[in-house]
Length: 506
Image 1 (cartoon, rainbow, N blue to C red):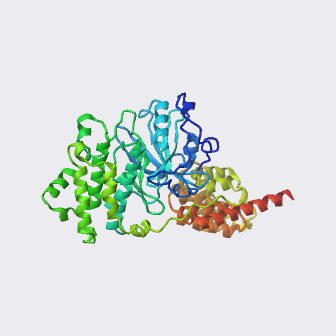
Image 2 (cartoon, rainbow, N blue to C red):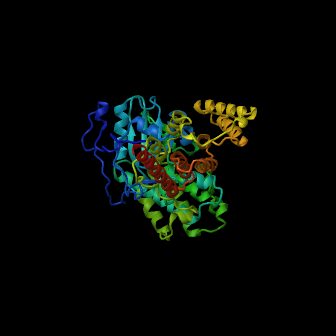
Image 3 (tube, rainbow, N blue to C red):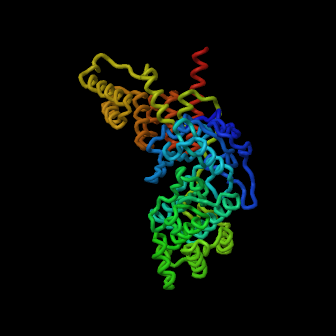
């Protein structure tokens, strides 16, 4: 949802345009590293690698997130330094995650840009990589690869179908350890507020560490928003994050993986000291784990949670301890998680698209609404032939219902519009493809993609060669994650539109 023509395609654009004087080495290209290569997917819809780091305009990101709609919020946190994370979709179909800060958190645009470029240099398959930022006026935003399969917290604490099996928990621990070790080796050892919500699952179900934690929540370094019981003791003493603080937080993640619950480290350490390791284990595992492996993880967690920072292991110790425990790398992560592998986002449509086609391609519901309002009922001409006898009071009531629906639709009161348009449709005296398309959009605005698809199909039945009916089906299918069908419908609509234009010219 949005085209980053001037900024997204210019990876060398740099904080200099915020009056900073940063060195010119901030030019990003995907690279490899001894610890691992660039992530292969680039998020859903990625192009075989992570995009180069770039500056985005606020207009681009506003379009991508449907004007930062509340429906696009995927997380929100932080009372002292509030921030929101939205999902969004660029014009090239790539999904992105956008973290929005307040200006109060980062009043100096140069400082924000410098921090973002520092994090943007990192590229690793264990990270949900940062691909850009926006420092436009009072706006402060970060842009990262979007991970579509939720957080570790969701899979551990709020699961519906199945809990995470033991082998997958070990894979999560190793992947996070490898991400931290890579960051440390690249001179970015500080990770702020590491917890189960920072561990994300990509389109293949592989666990990745969010890059957002590599950047402070604010210039003042408000680094921990979790309960104090889970905060490193030295941070409580001096308010500073150290590499050892990150290890402590990694220990709390190990406790989460072991127990399937978010339990205070002090309580867990009491259990470990009392040699009650078995009581620490998640009962939902039903004993399906290696006692030897679990003891190794318990011991590592205990070391990470030592009160004295110098007694904790480093990131290389984490990797060396966890690597031997991961014995079945051939099993795909999505199989272990019990999820279906996400389809790739559709490629660029085969034909040039009209404004309606562009809006539907990027699922920009606001733009679709504006186009339908402007089009009014122009495409309904010829779909109804009524006799004089049909102009009854019932007919006038029906048209009045449509008129009230039109007012509500224009005012974006979509629930009222659905009710009014339904009254019009239920009478059945007059059929209107425009009403069906408008009600279809109303359903989309209310997250009812199935109903939206039915209305779009009904509009096609009334007006078989009407591009708008196909365009609306495309959006509804995309909302239902039927990406290939959505692309087919989008191309069908573009073809009909092209045919209509040629007919008009001839």
